[in-house]
Image 1: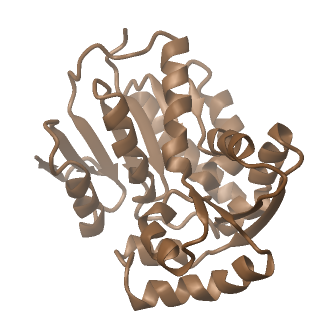
Image 2: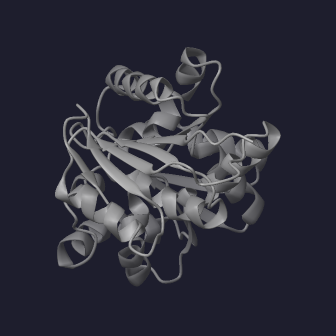
Length: 274
């Protein structure tokens, strides 16, 4: 047993979509989360810049003695996970792309037409097609970068006319021309607009990597005997910019929770305890 926390990080608040799935299935585990809200979005930045940010945050989590680092960011998982593993060889480092790819390969077959949406860097990395086709080479895959989604979601625009117009602009042709029946949300921000996507394209079967990541976390905890036997720590959520939207999202996640939560800014000087 190991009661140390699991470290999560993302470019912003999108990775928070992973937390409810973990809380529901592994209620004894505690969390240290870092959202790089001051420097989001990552998906249109240079790969060298993204790697630099990822190293800083993984170092930050390692210094807080996490037992595992879960990269709740498709962009970082696509371009930096192996470098982070080399940087922290004593800590298991899990990405979000591999478990989602395995689910797609297992759930779909050659009759499906599968769309993958993500940031520019995630799409350019080619990690989703590479991993999915490794598991199931018969699948038909199509990718689309949707770079403007993340800034709007970070501003809290997850429903309504503006986000629906943007979804339509990116996806009408992508869905129609490729005759898609399945859609992979290749960014942890995108589950926050899942309701709007489903309203516009009700025929699409949606695969959410935020849900699928839980299985790989559970498998790693079991393999290394790292399960916590009690929830002995508070959950701590750090942000490089402690924005109102970030705090509101955590409030929503923990509204009916018995667990203690702390919010902290990147410089650790600002703290709001709940």
